[in-house]
Image 1 (cartoon, rainbow, N blue to C red):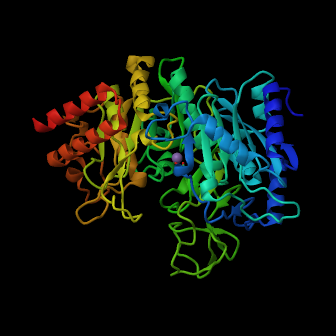
Image 2: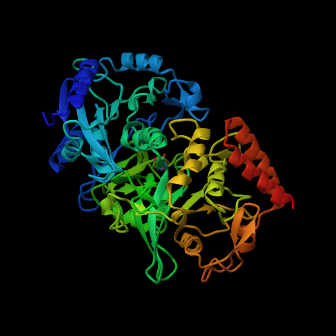
Image 3: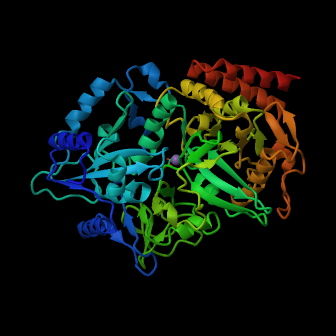
Length: 595
Ligand code: OXD
Ligand code: MN
């Protein structure tokens, strides 16, 4: 046995007795172990080895067509009471849910191997870090966890004999009868999928899905939902944010985080290649930030992950060159298309579709087909250390000191390119009103309506959102006054009357970061408005961009904002128990609009 930790040993015994696997394997996280599992999955048909010359040491997996994304409807927070979970979560009674799941897990690993994956979220040895142990019957999960976390022997070393860990139980929910042949991607039908979180004992039980955040339990389940509960109780923040460092031409560095909902370009911004001369961006993380007071009294951020689990479609040498360099080797691809020469392709990769591909279903595909070749949520899994823009500070055990927090969503109308919060509480107000407009991407009667997503944490907060907003307000008292970060609400997605984007986005977003950094360092004035501080005309550098309608991008329209205020009020009322301070700031905004 690899550990003397009694809690871990007895938990593994208990789960083995429940799940009844054929074998138990403790993962050490070594390259040999990874290579062995890959070889085994290639042999079984679960994985395809890509062309070694084109994409060294890289593999393609295809999921079952019913198992392609996080399942929010099947994600549960089983707190003691429904009130504690809040309307933002699906609640189940913890005793009943544990019973339902115990029945499902009983014998669920028959014919399979039970893998024990000790892992650390956060840099090894950091006081920020949390040890988890995932038990899974999916070798695909093992190889992904090796990239996304610090996994294996190092995690057991950090756990030690008496250390505590978050138990994360996972099964694909597809036991094999004696002699039954396995399929390439085993999983359970949707109504049997459960992504369950138990706040009382901080444990995670996930059943029936092998995909992404449903199955790689260190990510959304531990580092966001469970961590948000710990953070509330311990006085820190677990956030759906990227972390980056911006260096200006004078060599001054500004660290910032940014919260955007899923699929709004966090990975692109985290690895941005600036179009302004002399600027440099370095990446610390692209999805999750843990924030707490550091010894120096500032708000310090750590990326708990060790890899990127990024959306492939739309990623190209134009949109995100650093991501493309990162995934040139040692990468796991899931649900992208396969080229005839054994490489990968997806929509928006920057080259036209070849005449023939194998699509994500494993079928022949040709341009003009009635469906995309790569699934829209197809992914790459790759080590952060491979990113050319990775910051030398990315594993700093004390994190990096944050002086700006960006917030944003997809708002084709109404919301300006950038506006700065007046102070901490006003920044929380801006975070609470974040949202994205529902677009024609899905057939819905809600097109044009705004789905509010405070701090992009709607699907990731392990308790009620109003209490979460209160916790954010209270965090102000933990940070030194002169080190409080500034908040900026940004919107890269504004469209003009012709439907075209008003702002170029991507590498040109550095122009907005430049303005934010100047505000942080007190170098530039701004115009107070009903929503906060707006850039003065001409203060955002648009040299070389040609025609950009800054007037349209930076003007608040009174009627639109009065309507927006009504929608925010309705949202607050529906959420319930929203802190009075946020209602006061909403009233203040309306008063300023009416002035
Ligand atoms: C997400 C992700 O869905 O990061 O937000 O995968
Ligand atoms: Mn995310």
